[in-house]
Image (tube, rainbow over all chains, first blue to last red; front, side):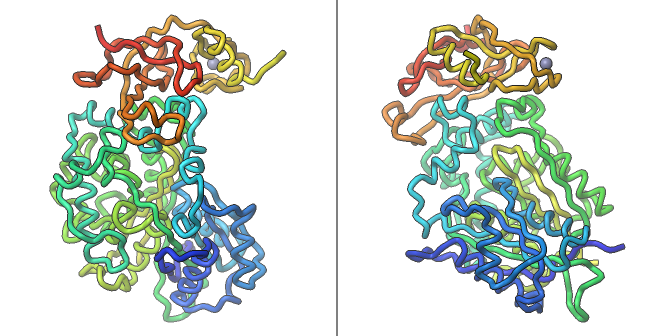
Length: 380
Length: 128
Ligand SMILES: [Zn+2]
């Protein structure tokens, strides 16, 4: 059966530099991905990109394609909040499978630090309705409301949530590119300043520059001797824009990731027990716990205990966020994708897993647990 | 003069009338208001007065203001409450009330107040 495949992955340097643009980092990541794929720029006939919060672009994909000197037959700019990094790979898979193009370049880059945006908080608050903003919430507050509800429902503890940040920091320790590498303890997390209860500063995603890219084509077009990563399944789902319109978040605690992951597993013909690795969107510690339960990696209310028992550890049953994730490595959900591809192809460098994963789940979450995109990757 | 549902709701609140959007067809309360009922997809909705009776769903205490107009209030608690039928309202908890001992399901009361100078519902009581 023909499916979409990822031929290569690239990441830009993330050191903030005055004047460095989102396009600069997108181009750097794209050139890396094209090289890793064993292709030339001229082979690219499709481009799909994410959006920038720091810079204005009417069509980011157009500005990126022009900077690379290409005139693709298919191009798209996707704005699906945090889910964008995974969603643009799904867009590319649909484009190559549907015949809109043959070889799609997938890029998400943003200069959230170098761009020195004067109203980053305002740009993020645009994801909330006026009826939320009026009470004075941070984005963290909206996740905090969900976290408080989760803790009340299951008796989960602050230590359960903090253990997610501790686990991913441990992974970042081996990643030479990670922003924060020094080990932290549960006590360190719980003694970091409270951002919006129950979430502490060390439970929130970093804000960094980033650029990541992959190249997607069809499995029947893979160059000889090339060793691709197959996109075996994917699924997307959307439950709400405002959390006020989705009471499930506060009753059952279910998100649309249950549906997106079911679709992806079904398409792949695999289940949670078949996974060798996961890269889970970790904008806050609570996000990871709730998504794990939606994926069926553990029972409802059991994710904290599973993390404390080492389920997600790089030496454990399901190594996850092996680069340190959004919590310790860098911003940008596209880096969950590039990390998965690198680990599976055995070129993750200093933090390569001892055994290259044969299967992986990659998941992006957007808005306040509203937009969900799941992919199941494999080596067959 | 006809107004969009959101503008109409802000207007009512500014006039001192606590109300929320209700569907003409299925009677669901909907918040934030919109042009279509999220329960039955009817496009016929109106604003209905509320007695402010609600139940506590969740809460979070904010330690860093998202914008200058909220800075003087830090730290402050934001509560989430549900109205009849489950519609959720997010509102500032009045100063002096501590979330210690709170749990979901406690009775809570909304009344009109002001946050950062803007009239809107606030939570003025949680529990007995
Ligand atoms: Zn209705």
